[in-house]
Length: 190
Image 1 (cartoon, rainbow, N blue to C red):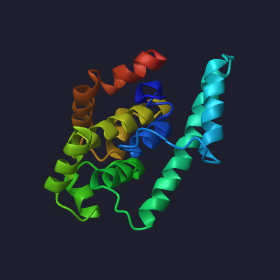
Image 2: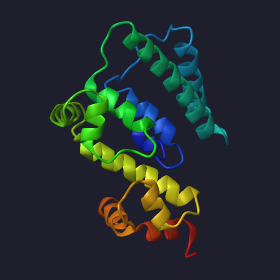
Image 3: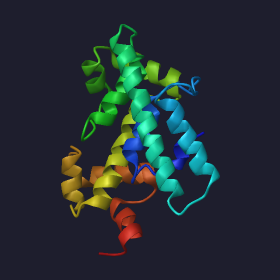
């Protein structure tokens, strides 16, 4: 019903994180669930009857639905079902602000080896843990660049880069533009 591309990672990053944390869950089989069924019916109704607030309504319903599903999954995890390593890593990555840089740091927090963590992520998502870390660093950096007036040195320091030039190279490698170019594209030259 929804794809990650529907969500703007800069403006609606929390919603995107909720989708990513669902992992392999691809369908909800019980429309009769007293909470999920009515939300899905409201989403369907909103999608079929266009209004000026249609997108806002659907994204709001989606956020509530994902939060409810995540709560049910956490409850299931606490009742003895072990959450897969990659899912635990992605959950930790989503809540670590600013994100740590090294796979080894997350592996230590998850009480596993960097190799096991990379292998689990590669198997589940097709990307290594370090690729997920880089993507999260870039996403968080984009938010800070757009939503604060901090200069590049301050942003590099916030994300624990040793110097601003390394941060600029890292950002450009992953986005194709420097942090200044990225900010200027949204706000014009400042």
